[in-house]
Image 1 (tube, helix red, strand yellow):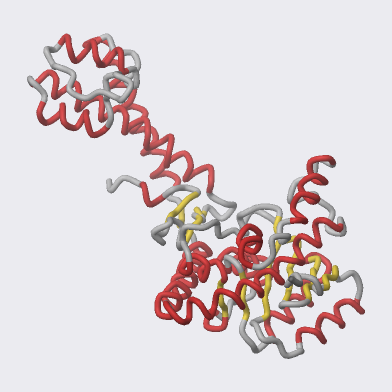
Image 2 (cartoon, one colour; image 1 turned 90 degrees about the horizontal axis):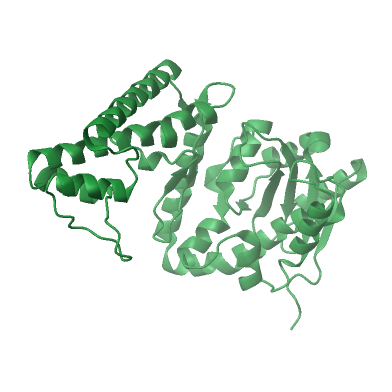
Length: 355
């Protein structure tokens, strides 16, 4: 069987003739939307540089070094009147907006990551593994050469030379793979879930704009909250030590001795036979402990754990992750879970306590 990638041609645009050739190719008719992709030195468009922009269809792929030929890339993005497709368009669109001012024509943009998650949310949906499964088993062949070269030369995604063949070939193939995935997945999803697909495309637009706008960090408020929680933690730890000889609120052995000394039978155990003091079990002792002293101990343990958790997991991250504009630009994974539920990271705001 002939490989779907057998006749693929890839080119790194190095001079004006290459750019002219690419522009002629963009003007040709094609059976799939024009695919685009980006390569960057990191995951945040507000902190990391854009390095490459790639365009592709079923048969050809062009790689554009951003710093040298960004004008050519933007000319194509701004003047092409047909439909686009990308794999994880939310990521690429934000880089092109921040670094090039490109406003995404969302009504003309398709997303093969969204199509893949709707088609089968249980499988790996990374571009290369998905292409290996659905397009050609050799779709990931170039990854090994690239990663070996980066390891041997101590390069990362910001320092690997743009003209290093394994790098630009690896990148240039992405648009081609995206086109092949679109050709396979779009009819399947259109036949069974066209409504949900349109809904998720709209969610991509909304979440992309949310990430671009970000959240303004109220630094004085956050710093005051950190100080408050640290004081609560210090006060409760002092009380636990003086009243119950507990020096570590996480020590199950110390907590067991403290509760038993107050007359509380230990009711919850781990599978390995250790006493269990989770948020849920402490909540039970707080409301249903054998006496008021037990209930007070459980309540204070919950207080100190929250006082430690809030600065560590959230408040310090709000300060550390803000950009030079004082904005916190979280990452929203639109269909992050196998159930297609959204997830938020950097920081995980969906886990933030109500109060």
